[in-house]
Image 1 (cartoon, rainbow, N blue to C red):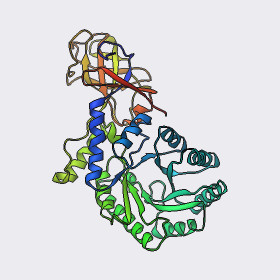
Image 2 (image 1 turned 30 degrees about the vertical axis):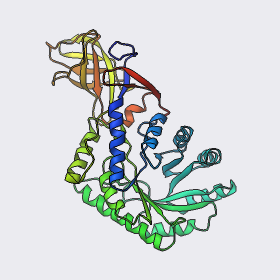
Image 3 (image 1 turned 45 degrees about the horizontal axis):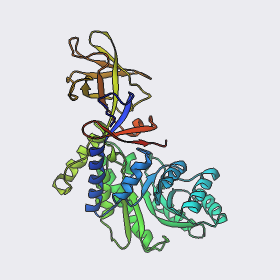
Image 4 (image 1 turned 180 degrees about the vertical axis):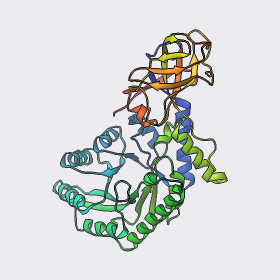
Length: 390
């Protein structure tokens, strides 16, 4: 079998550990199950149809996407329930979704936050003889999309009801736009507000189904969303969380976010283990042009750099037995289009042709650099190659 250590894979390359991927897959599904909430992981992180299938097979309620083309990619992979956590705007995008519904029978949901958009959607899908499922998005002042008040949302809900081409199925929010030192308290208050609006709208008969969908959560605050949205009557509410980065995780911003999640959960998390960083980008040492400086064959075209630079996690010299941890003073301090500069000690045991595994922060912006990912086992043997569809 091809092996990373035998130099059977051209570097730089994005590498995913199969065992860590499986750990993350089952950890989050187990967490959602334990909290009695549904999981619709956000597929924009990986845009890897094979991973969508694994998530659905593991028990995910559906897959979340951000655009009509992304939804098509998921449906082509056999995903039968798609939540587009975005507004569907423009006739060309409406046509893509309509054709998707007509040809695959997928259960499709999207967001709405304005009567104008609702009218556009209602007219288009009624003309196609289709019924589109909608969730009203609730936002926050200074945030992103979404209704800013309960009255605004109620008026929108009432404007949707006359349209035969629309079904209002619930309410959505994204709490990740709320920040600051008191973010936790503000997020909890916002989530409780959204929950109460949803329950109220249901009592008022504004939804098209006896069970309303109530959904939120990125990868940083999913515990709060599960706690607040899960505290609802099961016969009236379907609570859905939508983290995405958990499947790959990282050693940067999402490692820090997960640490904060675990601190908030304390002893209340009954799921064993934790998320693991499953992604590395491997590169060669290309040049040692001066003492203390190593140039690597990896740059901005290969990995994320928006939330911290990639950092060395393993060092391997071809022909030796196994990779080893690099010295603590090895540090990538500058990244260019196709190169990275790594600081090492002048006496470091490093040679041109050595292989360096780098861990990254914010996996979304590493994945979108690659058309193909290499899945390896814990012995660095290639077990599968999967394609992305960015």
